[in-house]
Image (cartoon, rainbow, N blue to C red):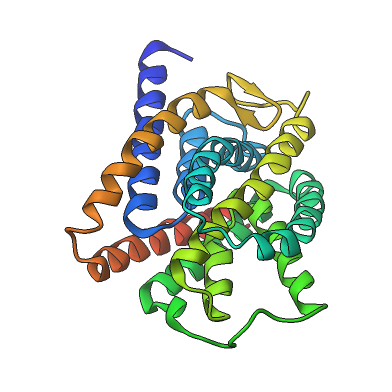
Length: 272
């Protein structure tokens, strides 16, 4: 990669990490929902192989979530905000979904993976735009076997799309009458259950694959991690402070619009 390309690559990924951290602090959304489409676009712009660039975007996003998710989960745990009963109940089934999703995600065509992400991102955008997290569908979490099925589905879809699980876990928990702060805290811990085995699985699955971007080990790009993680960590506290000063409703609509446009473009690019 030429110097000017390397500088551009680094600048875009630093910006992506900063935006991901800012949005996490402002709106409580997982960074993966920002990082994946940016990585997908960047790897394509800098000559990444179309056959693997979505896989590398997902694997790299999961690796960044390991670092940022650990810090977030530790902070929430210190405040006693994580629902440990839900974590114990859901954790094994989320992990089972992650194992299945890693196997499927690393084997399917990159365009199908991009289409899945685009659909999930559009649903997240809809949720943010209409505030579906205010909907209470039940006064408690579902019983067996629905609880296990939901947890497994969250793990499977999250790992295949490179998101930490908050975008799916928080709406489910709040729909079952879990207070939003407790839902966000619990989702941060579930995000680790998704990201750690998911990142390892994508790294192993991508070993020896042709067309990987420079600096990649399997489907994890180390340069992307090195740039995104510190930028996200520095920007998140700024977003948290701004959250108390800026109108949340307008921010949600703007971000939902950005997400819808980005997801729509990815969907069009992935269609044959």
